[in-house]
Image (cartoon, rainbow, N blue to C red):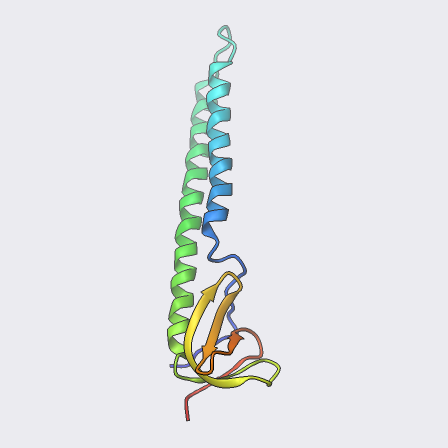
Length: 135
């Protein structure tokens, strides 16, 4: 199995709680706006039913987008963990060539994968890092 480390994990891939809470605020704001609009409409000119249905459809689309983003974050995390498992026990050389050794463990942070060598040295896994089978 070859490990292609040219694919990096986007910054913030694991910070779904921050992104979700920001999105949830937008989602909640949209709902409050819709309710306020319905409460404050002119009784002599009620909202057209087609406008109401269009707003409900928009509301549903926002909800689906939030759920899709959550699932995509989970898929990205799962993919990153699969990559992490594939490099344990392999020899790694940092992008600058100064640090190398056998990977003992891998941690997943918001900036991407970080390989922890047997001597405790940490090497960020990204562009220019060389990963080879253990000798």
